[in-house]
Length: 130
Image (tube, rainbow, N blue to C red; front, side, top):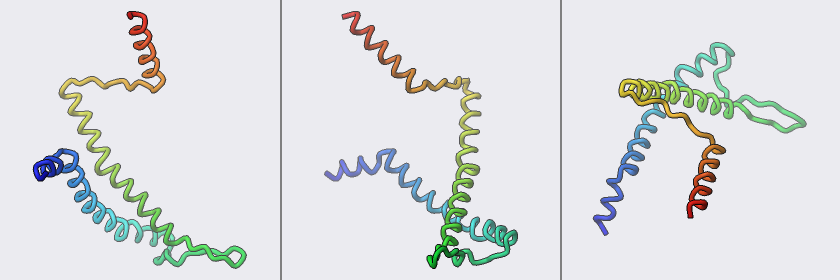
């Protein structure tokens, strides 16, 4: 029972997931600091308002507070941009350079329609050979 649990924990997927969670938390702290210390003050310098949480508008005596949503949207877009430009894009570039160095050709991706046609043709040829 213990050995099975040990095998499960030492599997690549579990370890990779644990590393990803830890790295994600650390990276999240960096991006949160970037948003709160750099990006939001820049937006404040442009638009001149420091506290966005109190932004709201009223329609027919109903108040709609959108300031917190605005802050969270800016944070989300900033985090997505940081992840893409600081992690995804460089890793894709390194992977492409590695493939070029090793002489691995780019694989053409088949569409779902093409794959289904290939499966149909294979099944038809197997049926005809029997």
